[in-house]
Image (cartoon, rainbow, N blue to C red; front, side, top):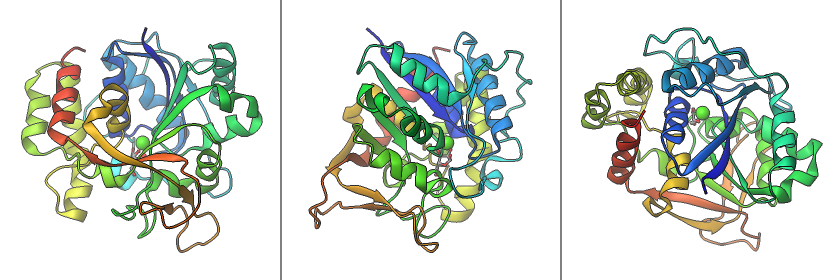
Length: 311
Ligand code: RIB
Ligand code: CA
């Protein structure tokens, strides 16, 4: 029986690769995609999600538009990383498939209420606004969620949008605070993990060597996406953040982490969005998240490349 998931996302080249990995994996059933404002404004994230589904030939998956701004702050976007469209790199056609009727938050609530309790995993890949709104509007769905497996946060790796905070958490720290305090089983893929998943040139060439529209498009996406990280960190390739979420579902053995307490800074402007991870257990705050610190990067890219070849 395939694991049912909902991907909440702000595509974003790395989000796109995560969506493709999920679509290529028979272990997973993607019930729907909920778009959120993040890397680029909502109209573009909702557009990009549909373009990725059409690239993969999976237009049966519904896409719902969600929140166009964070709960409290004004929206911060990341065109400097992802380009004006959010999916710069490949030349993909405008989407033909329509957005599904209804708001993403309603889709999350309705689906979690109608699917068997504990049968649906949420995979947030962007700011947590949609998920937090669903949990707040319908508290009854919390116990019905199997697990939330999200990309976000940082501890030893520190921040990528400020010295203290990772982008997804920084954009909507209030939403993240709601999710981290929800009591829902939580797996967190932070920069501590994703910065070890670099698309080096050989890995990027392996995507291109697939010779398929998907393989070539992914190589073009990561070619574009990496210039920011190469310039900032001097790294050989871009970190493939969001596909780590899907890979953890498929092969958790590729990752290492600890069940610890993680809380989110929402008060200080200086450290807004910082994920305060009690990695060394120095407080008596109860564990609320499996915080992932390590990844078998070669194993991750072997899995990703093999799965992309199937599309
Ligand atoms: O900080 C990395 C995260 O922010 C990724 O999810 C990327 O897509 C952006 O949303
Ligand atoms: Ca993302």
